[in-house]
Length: 423
Image 1 (tube, one colour):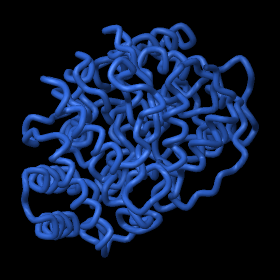
Image 2 (tube, rainbow, N blue to C red):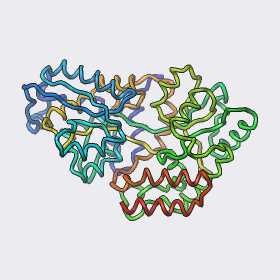
Image 3 (cartoon, one colour):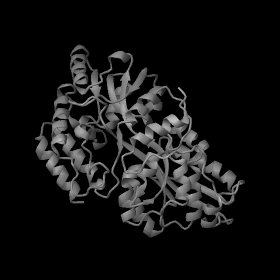
């Protein structure tokens, strides 16, 4: 279906809980640069340094499997517009850029622009590795409110959002009818137990049970949120609160519906099982749509089931993927210019076509799977971006895996909380 621009903006705006209100976002494209055919507003023109006319090469770090092709094609389009500026793609995976910039940036061999998830923002700012967003007011007018909020740290915006994301419940239509897709976790558990008993080498339900990106779902009952409602309370992660313990005990009980050790339920293994047609229900994101379509899978997407005692879909993490300008770049003007170019309507449509990720601006996209994600975004909350999040991933991975494999829930979550707060 085709989405109206305002529909996407409203849904993602509701997802924002970071303290920045939903303002009226226009769909106009931000001014590209002082050299563009239409002059920017006087306020931006006065504050923006001139773009170099000398030969410039911008090095850009991004991941493979879609984002790489986006940077290559966007770079070529950018060079057509600015013939003296060449964009060079270098593969550094999203999960490695924050660590790598701290090493390569000061050494003078780092990128001009690099991709990172918004939850790494606190670490990047604390390390002095990124520059504030140039023309932040113009970028804010273009970007979705949730993405702008996610990239604001201590009142200053950093980076340029290129996609928004969350995950939802995928279902194989050849294994379960749309009207039978569970809307509660209790029903999902019952369905999966029955399905497993009736099918050999197939599963009613599957998820990466080690990944805190997904298992955070089970800590969110009763509006429990990591680091408080706005994600900034560094005195309490809330990961071992009463609501979290209760939710993770239910998570542990799902072992009866998916009796597989945590070590065998990695994202890669789960992706493969679902794409092979051997799983009825699977939690993943829009980034996997192209893969599943490519193998001819007959599937749909629904919002997550509700947790016990709740009557709305479970809360999920929402994320903003951004391009950051390195504080070590010798070409910050051109780097900012290219980063903002990636937010243009043309480039955002291109990125959606290549990666399947939700655009970070108000733009029309065509996909039969979007509705499920838009509904889920109504109940999603941004991953906190404070430095303590750096310790969350490994700590929550260990806790989730151990809990799934039978360890005491309170003990594991207490240890997880201690590790996070020690950051």
